[in-house]
Image 1 (cartoon, rainbow, N blue to C red):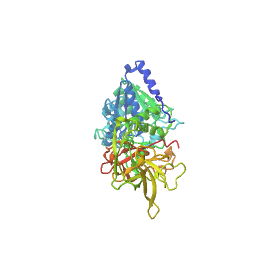
Image 2: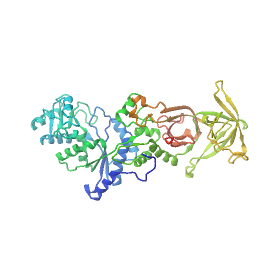
Image 3: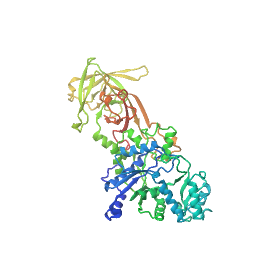
Image 4: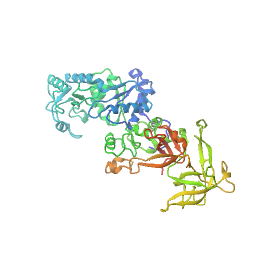
Length: 553
């Protein structure tokens, strides 16, 4: 996808819903749901689904439920439930009702008994390996289970005994009775229930059997009166099963399932299994590591709810899988922070500059605008002293071509201050530059120097009043646009994905920054005060994005 900004991105789902509403389908109502499984933290791919489901409901003054698909208690926890609720709220959405699939366990069980009574479901006592073999392949039909013709009475009895915990895990499953010769493998007598003697965080030890997602999902949608069930493309082949279950049960509501393409973002891994591996194997510092594509990680990196909603709108909703350039995501946050973030000065790799023709106790207070295009943002006082720090990159003994910063014998303007001239270089025994000794032109405060042209303007921080800070520079976690092409997860990780600078100096105003407050560090990039580690005694800032688009290089 190109980096150009569309006025309104493509969304074929809106066209479908527009027609449904205009035709009076579902009495003109639009009801959607976002149904995550609470087995991990949400990532930016989920943000796309959140924006679609909540945004679609909001566009038509409808309703959107948040429903937890808590049918696999082995992998689920309240930690993930709480994190998901916080992420949805942080993105700016409110659910109409908070639901859990476990709310419907009794109804799901009775619906399954109804399928058995219709001879549309049976208890299979085959092993898991035998079931796999019987399903066939894409080119060969499946073969019927030897238990497929059990009587309705026997199936009802076995299913009840499964529920009561009489059997061990894996001893029986409940399967739908559809068509073992179907060209769609999902219709070859799919599993509806399996035995799982596991404690459930909400229902305790009441259940020894748990329903499968394909069965739970459609019935839960029907119970909640969902009109448009919006799913990613991997569920397209499951839609016939979705419709089959509801047709057999003749539910009063039959939602319409519509599939859309998942998000594929360059240099990013959005497989939940791989994300869990990154955390558990220690490749990152946790779910909220700023390099992670999790919503909580992107929040800590400095992405805002508005920027993620903008990103989801720009990329649109399509039926076709496509890779999205990282520049599209970065442009969204850069555009917002360029408009809104107050400006500050920070020196990441300090060199001391002593202005020798100023008194040792010299101190001036300059007033700097917080935002050059927003007068309402006000200003702050910045102290200027005889000794200041500049960035090491802003000095070169042997300058490259077109270098317009400080050089031996050369002049440069200190931002909002004087023009200074480098007169002497102080080095240590290893040849490392320790200090620059300069003189200043007092006539250049707020004025251009007479008789000469000074092109370079660099930022600075008072050595006397500057505040020590830690700055963390973040780059893509992976070296390849498609990380799955790496030989292994470890080999694909970018060793420069996190660079921690512990000797930075920032202007005094940044000591008062609050956690998650955003800034533009002049000439460097956009940063956020870390939501966990930042404090006035130890300011910590994370780079959200560079000042300019670096992907075009």
